[in-house]
Every structure is written in C-alpha cells, then in structure tokens.
Length: 283
Length: 188
Image (cartoon, each protein chain N blue to C red):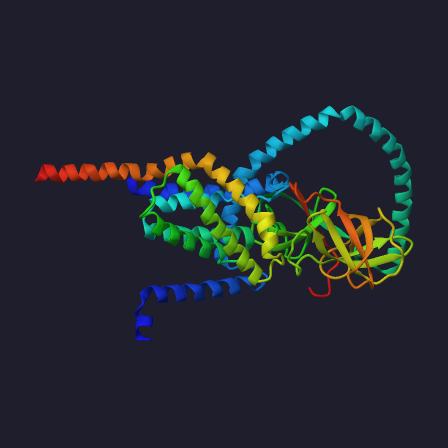
C-alpha cells in the first residue's frame, strides 16, 4: 500500500485521468455561453482560419463562374420559359399577399411563425473528425447570432447554431449522428398537413429520416418537406427537402419518410442564419 | 534569436497544420468520402509526431496540452479528448525515440501505428459519452482503413519538408554548442 503511493508515475497518471474526466464532463454540460478562455481561443483560430478559407473560396468561385459561363446559352433558353410563368405567379402572389395582410390586420396578428430576418455568413472550417459534424461560420454574437437558430445553405436547411463566440459560431449539421441535436419538427403540406420529426440521417444513401408521423394520410413521393415552426427557434416554411421514399417504421405502426435534402451537406460554402421574429414560449 | 526560433517554429507548424486540417475537410468533403470509407486528414497529429521526435520532453508536453486544448475547443467543443490523446502519443514517442532514428520511411510506418492508437482512443471516448452510435466493426470498416491510407500517403509526401523544418530548429543550437565549446577551449 505504502509503495503504491510513493510511486510517482502512478499518482501522476491517476491525477491526469481524474482531470481528463472532469474537464470532459464539464465541457459536455450544455450552457448558454462558453468560458472566456475558450471564446478567445475559438475567435483567434477563426480569424486565422479565414486566411486559409478566403483564398480557396476565391479560387473555387473563379472556377465556378467559368463553368457557369460554359452553359450560359442553354440556361438562358430555359430561364426565358421560366420567366413567363413567373409573371403569372407574381400577380397571384401579390393578390395573396394583400389578402393575407388584410386578414392579419383583422386578426390583430403581430408576427406570425413565417416571419424571419436573415444573417449571411461564410464557412471558415469544418470539424476534421466528423464525430460531431460541425462547421465554423464567420458570424458571431456581435452580428446577432444566438444558440439554436436554424441555418440554411443554398436552398435547404442544414442545421442549427450550437455554439456562439463573439465573431464566430459553430453549426451542428443535420447529418449528425448525435441523436439529441438534430431533431427538427417538419411538415408536408398536401391537401392535409402532415407533421413529423426529422430525427436521423442515413449516411449510405444520403437521406434524412422523418419519423413520428401521426397522420395516416398517404404521402406521395416528391412532395416538399419544410419546417413547421412548432417549437424551438425555427420559423415555418424553410425547405428541408423532398420525399424520396415512404415506408413503415420498425414497429410497423406509423409511416416513416426518407427525405432527399435540398442542401448539399458535402459542399457548404455560404450559409444564411435565420432569426425568427416570433418569440418562442421558452424565451 | 535562437530561443525565439525554438519557440516560434513548433507553434507555427502545429497551428498551420491544425487549421489546414479543417480547411481540407470543409472544402474537399466530396473527395474525402471514398468507396472504401471516410478519410480524415490528420496533418496535425502527423506534425506533432515529427515534433515529438526532436523537441525536449517538457516543451513537447506543454505544446501538446496547449494545442490539444485549441483543437478541442475550436473543432468540437468537447474538451479533453485531443489533450489526452496528444499526451499519450507524446509519452509513447518519447519512449520510442531512444531506440529509433526518425527517418522518413520509419516515420511513415510509425505514424500508421500511432494514428491507429489515436483513432481508437477518440472513437472510444465518443462511444462512451454517447455522441456516436456506430459499432467498432463499422468504425474500422468505414473510417480507420481509409484514414490510415490517406495519412500514410500524406506523411510520405509532407514528411520530408516537415522533418527538414523541425531539424532547422536544432541545427543552429548544435552549432552554437560547438561554438561555446570552442570558446571554452580557447579560454582554457
């Protein structure tokens, strides 16, 4: 017993194991803001990281614009047809918007679940070991970013803010295996609105899984899946993807929908952070 | 001047490799997902392996603690994992380096072994704290093989310039010690 404690190496090992476990568990405790030291480290690293991501962004942007130039003619033809349709839709939209406004006034609605403000940012970096699939974005609490805000890229939802520093923040992607962080309440608007929960990601086929669907309505393929705005800080009507396959869940009780995401999770360069104007109950 | 170089060069090498890891992942995710698995760039671990062969033990331990903290805080927000794994790797290398000369090919082979330790340790911790649900078999099939292949090649390509850069730190010191030796001799 005595010899055991005089062994210097043993004591050092024990102390470091204790320290390791306590630091790990302290950092796992989710709190609103990070310790000051961590904020400084993350911000300095984010500023340095920009020195690497800026030039690469510029070069890829150049190549993208060259490849855009190559198929300009075909695209132009297609867009001309599209424009004709847009005029019709615009007229319809104007009427609907006007009607919506008058109805809102009648009902005394302050702000509905669909109203939001956007903050756009650039991706600096991404966690190399994708155990926690996170990207680092160059917008922070100084720009009004808060924990829990949804983040879009291209035309679809990619995740939500998990950590905020003064000039940078982290975004947890929907592809995360972490089961606690990627639940988004979603809906499919058909004749009847179908509510569900985006609760998983199938890495092999690159599809999101929408489960806990209570409705028994038959869901058709290629229907648009969007956020429902119920719960949390996510507004209504952000596109998630479209229905790829409808099956039953493992118990055979409810429907389960495989959703092809609208955003490309492997190539995220610019993001839009969404700030919902309607306050949720929790705030 | 010498002291300055000794402090700055390891920090610059580690910091740049840490940031490059993240940049590679964010811009080349499509290329990193291959048919035989997901490749994780570990330039940071590779450069700390090379540094551990050349720096003094105390210096290397404090560097691995500092950069382990930065890596954890910047990328995952779960503190402690890379701090611990870098300490373990440093400890192992400090024992190995008494027996082995750091030639490039030996370093490539050694990095495969050390990266296996690294990957398994990180996986085990994430498994224990329940941030991942995949089994050890899936982990080995989908991540380990591809990561080891990718990083062995990375070591083969970038190892030589890194070794040269690290040797550059100690080069002047040796000359200086010779110089002081000479001065002492003259005084005698």
